[in-house]
Each structure stands twice: as structure tokens, then as C-alpha cells.
Amino acid sequence: MERRKPTNLWTLVLAGGDGTRLQALTQRITGAPIPKQYCRIFGNRSLLESTLTRIASLAPRKRTMTIVNEDHLAIAGDQLRTLAPRNVLVQPRNRDTGPGLTFSLLSLARRCARARVAVFPSDHYVANARAFVAHVRRAARLVDAVPDKIALLGIEPERPDSELGYIEPAGTVAGHGDRGAYHVAAFREKPAPEVVADLHRRGGLWNSFVMVFEVARVVELLRRERPSDVRRMEGLIDRPHASRAAYDDLPRWNFSSDFLARIPRHLMVVRAGNTGWSDWGTPQAIARTFARYGKTPPWMETPATAA
Image 1 (cartoon, rainbow, N blue to C red):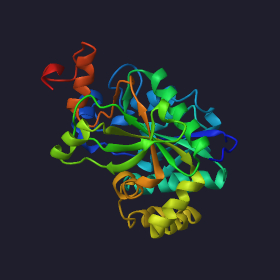
Image 2 (cartoon, rainbow, N blue to C red):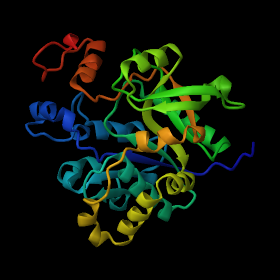
Image 3 (cartoon, helix red, strand yellow):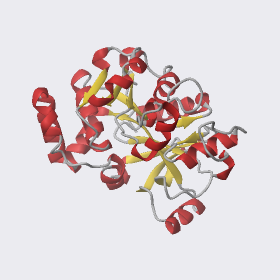
Image 4 (cartoon, rainbow, N blue to C red):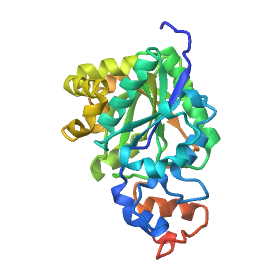
């Protein structure tokens, strides 16, 4: 296995979601139905601010980027004040994670052709930031050793949960098995409950959607798997003034189910334990986190233990 000289790591935070499932909750907390990543749900930082703080040791701010929607700028602006304006990528609107990530990766590739990037959702909760970052560093070292693959962070599941994506590990990555690095047999986005139960028994891992990879390699795979989407996005980047109306015509597609699930042979997974991770996709998931720490959310009408 050929080892390349490690490249400087970039970080990319995805903050373009609309958070429609939690709008009633954010309305109750802030008085407005804002996307959850901008809401201070637990503590004095928003989920976006917490994400930026958590990953600060992985890359300097000059190599930290985020993607937001144009109509989020009024909310997000103050929370992104530590980033240079050119590092805040603005898409006209949310078209799901596929277009958002394609837009971000093509933009980053034009700035740094050999970039290696760690991608983070902005709307997750992590209790143990030190352990979480250590797992990301392991994934980055794995990509240094196997640069043609995508390294995913697979969370050790606390319970079967059909609301989450699952990664099914295969054999260990040569030379890295003792550090919990595996090839991927299958990538399953929100499988049926009976499938989840079987995956749970066989050691399936939750998909955190945190991943590390060489940008050029993933752009190459995107061109192979979704060529028309890449061509259309490149055209929009080349003609930014025409992008607003053209963005409405982009097909919505999901990076996990419509791309990663198609290419399991190009994936690796790093088993990540002791992180206290939750995707906070539902009020029940948030309430479970509060209950774990013996707290009751002040904005919940019923005790957190009811979840």
C-alpha cells in the first residue's frame, strides 16, 4: 500500500438544512421557526457555533469553510463571524445534501486542487468533543494511508433506530484493524425496523455523516456516478448571477442514499465510541440527551423522560 505525504486538512461544515421537522420546537425556543443549527438548544452556543468550536483544533480558520443558504444569512451572519467571507459558501436555497456538498467540493477544489477535507453536519450534538476529534484524526490518518477511499465515522449504536442511517462493516482495513477501521459491506439509509434489528445484532454502526476524503477523489466519483449533476453545478458556479433561478431546477438528491449507498467498495468506516453523539433529528432525540444528564428542557411541555 503506497503512502502519500499527508496534505493539510480542511474542514467543511454543512449548515444549509432547513430543519423543517424541528420548526415547532425552534419557534417555542426562539419565537421564530429558524433552522435548528442556529438555535441555542442546550447551553449558550448554537449547534453551529458548537460545531465550529469542536473542530477548531483540526484546521485553522483559513482552512475552515461552511455552506449556508442565502435566506439564512441574516440569522447565520453573527455566528459565522470567525470565518473569512470567502470561506462562507452561499447557495441560493437548500436542494438537499447532494447539491450542497457538490457545490462545496467543486468550490474547494478550485481553491486547493489537492485538498483533503473533513465534513461535518452542523446540527448534531456531541458530549465528548475530545474523543470525537480523536476519532476524526484517526479517519484522517486512514485517508493518508488509503487516499482513494472515503473514511466515515461510524458511531457505536446505543439502540436499534430506524430513523438513522447504518453502515455495515466488512473486513478490517489492512494494517488498521487494531484501530477499528473496516471496509464497508453496505451503506443503508434509514432501513426498515426489521433490517435495523438485524444490523444491530451484526455490529452495524450509525452513520454520523462525518467523513474525511481527498476532494479530487470524491469529485472523480461524483463525475462517474452523477455526471449530469456535476456538469450542471459547474455551470452554476461559472455563472453565479444566473444561479438563483437555475437552482430551483436542480433535482434534489441525498448524498447518503443517492451516492454513498451506491459505492460501498469505495468506503471505509472508523468505529467511534464514547462520543455521546446524537443527530438531534427529532424532539425525542433531544429529550433523550437532556434526560441522560438529568435535565428537563425548559421548553418541553412534558418531562424529558417521557421520550
